Length: 112
Image (cartoon, rainbow, N blue to C red; front, top):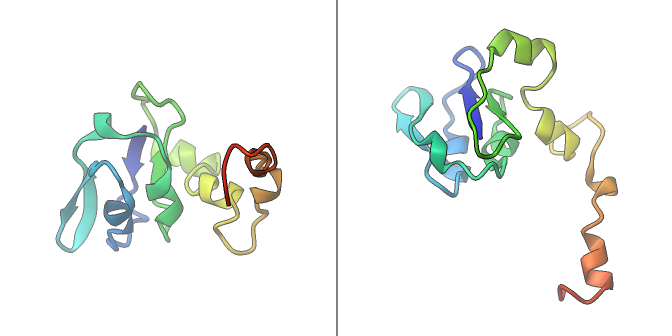
């Protein structure tokens, strides 16, 4: 579930607002977006993937809120960590080589 929009890192591009399929965020002109409907979050991580500033934290806990501290998240390297793990950030190891969903094609469960 979405837990944090970093006020210090956010560049107010609103990519997260556009990426969110559940309309969790409200845009604020010339300011970081606001998490307006956190309980609507599907924990899909799209907002975190599309954030160019690593300003978001989506907790892997899908159905409960987690109390977070921005400085602890930064120290632990968690802001933007999902995007890096998936290979969306340059210069960081990818994660797609570990993705076994291609087996669904091999088993005929999904057609290309």
